[in-house]
Amino acid sequence: MKTPTPQNPMLAAALILLATAFIAATTLMAKSLGTDALGPALHPLQISHGRFIFAFVVISSVLALVRPQLTRPHWGLHIGRTAFGWGGVTLMFAAVAYIPLADATAITFLNPVFCMLLAIPLLGERVGPWRWGAAGIAFIGAMILLRPAPESFQPAALLALGAAAVMGLELIFIKKLSGREAPLQILWFNNGIGVLIASLAVLPVWQMPTPMQWGALAALGALMACAQACFINGMARGDASFVAPFSYATLIFAACYDFLGFGVVPDGVTVLGACVILTGAAILAWREGRQAKPA
Image 1 (cartoon, rainbow, N blue to C red):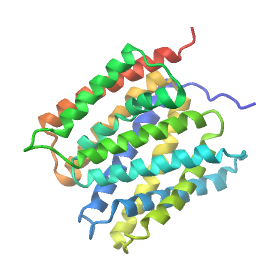
Image 2: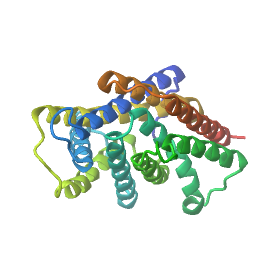
Image 3: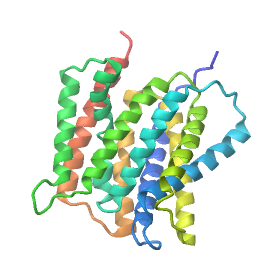
Image 4: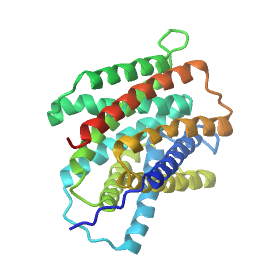
């Protein structure tokens, strides 16, 4: 029988905050690789390919050191989770090359909303008025960030919106996988299958990276592996309703990195849209936490 992880709310919060710093850093690396900051811009498919390869190397090294007992994997769930995860990451990496990191990050916070909507037909879940209200608020924030006026509309923001929808589908598979297998095993299979998918997809667009781009790709994969490890360990040490709000710090880190790396200052529309999305996401997280508590 698996020993429960000791609960430590403060450590859980610290781990989630560290994970958000790593996640935001991956978007900064992706933006540097998708623009001409480090050499000729790489295609988003090549950036996500590097992310999976180097993350798989890091996680495989940890697996070799820890030597956990592996169980029989559920291949269908792993392939589905990885395929949608790869698609969401690739769309996100494409978006950050054209719009501010804060905008793209805020829009991807819609993924739990899409997960909620998709859970109705796919998992048979019922959605009450609180969840519908939270979803409506978050979508209003997304519309603000899309800047729908003809003179300010951001077409690339639709890529981030697509990333959120695809990541919402990934969350459905994560829900189905949770409890079936150990977290490290899930990460290893996820990144291993991701390498196969990304390696096939990148063939038509692959180009030789510059030395600085190789370094950025390696950093991207390592940062993502660290983010995943911190997030999983943080979630295991605290209630989801307590831990979830700390993940929104990704937006703060993304805005800071974008300013330090590219001199981008968030405007009023970004701040307003992000606040509206975070309000909807926070209400949804609070409601999910209340529903998960035993009566």
